[in-house]
Length: 204
Image 1 (cartoon, rainbow, N blue to C red):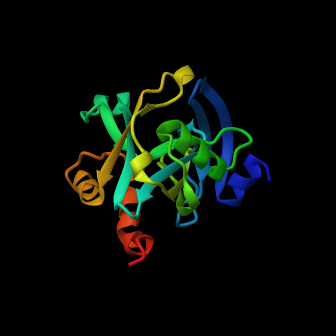
Image 2 (cartoon, one colour; image 1 turned 45 degrees about the horizontal axis):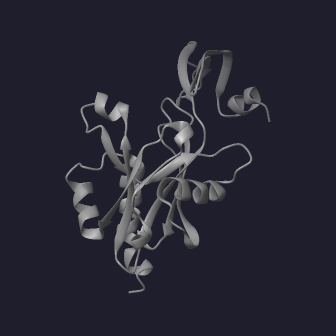
């Protein structure tokens, strides 16, 4: 089904669509009318949409040592918003053309941590990260690793990535979530999932 048909089926009448920016992120301007809950139609509205790639996020957990493996890197938007420039996060990255979410999980974990995934990653959720203004869809997983193999600096030199691996005992990971040292929503959501499933993963 084409874009116009899909939107119309959901009560959105597309009047116009143009690309305003075509860089790493793309910005599209839509003009449309939408059906209100009472059945009436709005006047023509303008909505700017950031067109983003699909991505994966991977919480790395060692159930034997009860430890979480995170990555740290500089995030300019975090610094601009008054958070620390160095952010602690789950492994994450874009799904490249020809990849599946699971193949991206394995590639990103290898590139960003050097760890090998033990067994099959478990899917946590597939969700839109901020549907009010962008199209990014996140495939979030948990993967089991041996935290003893996690250390050092990683990332692709061609992309000037500068990534540091951080291993946190579970109790410290929880503290970082509650005291604000983790500000990344992917990571916070994965942490809540781990709190619900940790006993099962540890076999207790």
